[in-house]
Image (cartoon, rainbow, N blue to C red):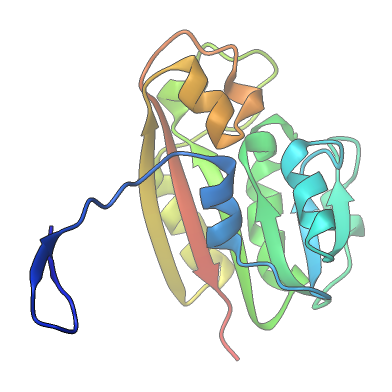
Length: 183
């Protein structure tokens, strides 16, 4: 990509896009003091990083019932691929809307059903259009999605998708959704 500096000199600049847990954290944009609802195990490396960011984390594990979660308390609902191991995956995505304060955001990585075929313990998996429709039905007004393809086990682990480490099929396709709740 050519870039012009202040002296109007054209320079070549290389823009690098990487797959990493950092990219998820940058997307989530968790600020100090925010209340965040983490869907997944609190022991995950990403949840630990969010705690380091000084966010107030509430976590749900597969043993927690969706109906017991508090409403309108959170600035963000955040999940990586751990949602695929919850018995009520659809319900957690729907419930995320109710958990958010007005103006809150859902940031979630949802793997494609084909990617999940060879992963043990998966109870929930759909495709991009199904996830999109579910989020719209839940009430989210603005939805952004980026489809990410991890082409090796190293990229899967680097992205923080430790739950997908058993996959034998590459690329592993995951949809990163950002869904916003209106005011």
